[in-house]
Length: 384
Image (cartoon, rainbow, N blue to C red; front, top):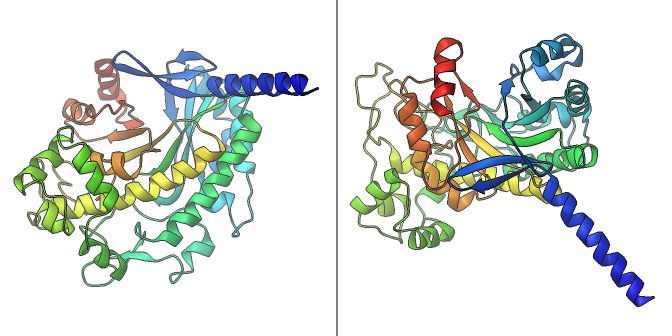
């Protein structure tokens, strides 16, 4: 009897490992990172729906045939926190189910975009019960103490509420799609970061900024001293490569800029860089925790996308500071290791420079958004 039980357990374990290995995954092949689905490499020919298009099954009924006719094999579509958790702890996954059901009908795969704490930096898609409770779910503040409509990335309560919802979502996806693998990948938030202020100046954020840098970051800097992103390596080295002290003591006081959108400066200059590193660490920690909680239920690839800096948005607060840009890539490697890819949404003109900027520290290149038309086609061909 014991031998039979042992054989059965071994067989079930083998089957479990085999099924796990077949679910969507990223695999390194030489210098390339490839998406594997059902054990085979897949090239995603993808298009993205409008922000709220996926909320209406009736609206999409006439859209799906056109997507298939355009020869897409993958569609990026948003799932919003406010729709799946309208009341705290009460979940409605009908918006998820209709996307999966329709995608299967047209033989399409999905990448689901988790519009939760942040969408284009703002907290637009949070549930009403979160929006109304400023005490429990604090907002970031500017230097004058004025709240901005952005959930604070340093808040444990904000982070854990988002993560609970995302984990429930991933559990549901595992239940309805764990064997068919319609859903290939998840996007964590959408173009997160702080806007209209270089960093969060709330009392909690002030205490963290003026306190010692986190211990995991200390260890990361020591371990990766000779393998840092080019931006961090330059700034940290210039300040003495310290591993103890406050954010400004370790990384230096930032170069300060104004708030003009005239483009009359070199956007490559690292204005407000220490503030951006600080925000990058806490956005990475927050989003990495959300991703890690989701992977406990269903471990498929997860990425974070970025609103880029550029000639008119040169520093933290003009673009979403702390978002997943290469300038803070080390913060994401340190504090958000469950995020598999940092991805640029490229609407700025310096396309090839951005691609090369993201191609460091082993980060795979995945571009969720770029311009359309002839320019978009030329960019696609250049990447290939």
